[in-house]
Amino acid sequence: MRQLLILPPIILLILALVSQLMEIAESTSERTIEYANDMNDALDCAFRGINIRRCSPTLMNTTYEEEYKQFEDVLKNMSTNLTNQSDQIIVSYHG
Image 1 (spheres, rainbow, N blue to C red):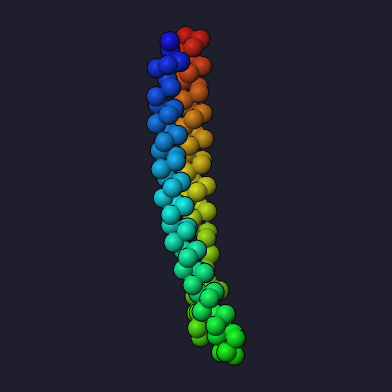
Image 2: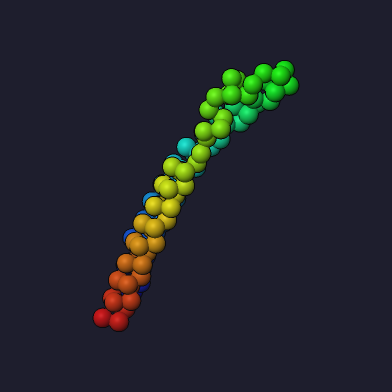
């Protein structure tokens, strides 16, 4: 019966994880679309013999480090929270 009392907080943690990861995925997909548009512009310029940096100045500066850092932080927080929850489950089960 005690396990059933601990289950809702774990489900809430997982739902919070999914929500945070969805926000990161949406941000990343928007940036990827912008990058693809820059690539398309760069290809048009390259075919016409125009310098790519003139048509797509931000193309070479695109990185996904911020999204990666957010993703890594979310996973670390979730791991810590799940570890704490599992410790509470063990204590309540044996206590």
